[in-house]
Image 1 (tube, one colour):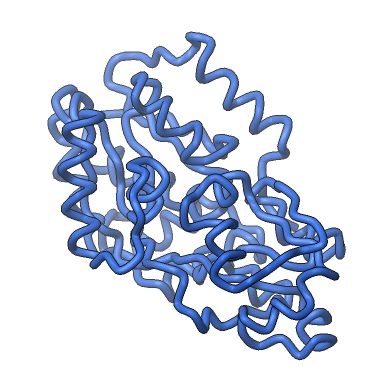
Image 2: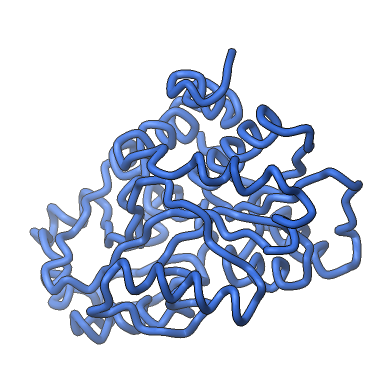
Length: 299
């Protein structure tokens, strides 16, 4: 049902980034995306907007295994010009800071300053939706143990298998913080590609996973989102990280990226995800229809 790139292919794509096979022709803007439908759609939205308003062509590398862990180093090397990223991911995972009790405005200002100083990159515009983490369990598990809040997991975690993407285990506000905050000791914790976690939930190979608040699969797979009753999660506003030399090389690019400001709200992003993940529509077709409806591009 789902349109994910298989793990071996994602690994192959990821490894190819470091073999010197990344040179693109002049005038080609190189975009990377993480291995999740939302990112595929965003990549196509960026591609369509760039190609509609400039004379540049676009090359998208979809589904980079490991997400930020591999995309950010590749951005530093110049393998890519830009990619969609989430504010707290950059703040916590790339900058190594804690987002607890930090305002969204402070996070944004720090991202702009530190990315410029450390990586010669910047963040341009926020799309308008917040896609934060949530903890989800199989519906039958929620019924069996009467789970409503994440705190409810503490009493039964020893009987359950937790699965999430590698990034989540590496993050300062990820798996360890979740377990420390809620006193969780799972029977087993496994790493799983971000695009495969819902199939794993459906098959019963894992019982608990991390979701995102714009995931269409939360409804499609009858997963139950547990209330974050101790308020662990922070906001993850989506934006675009871009190399500053790309803005120099492609002078029309910045104006296009600025037009993504406030373009998509949470409900719209969830609906776009649903069309691709569940209805199996092509992500470029979905992106195009959305941009036409918004009056951003012409038919």
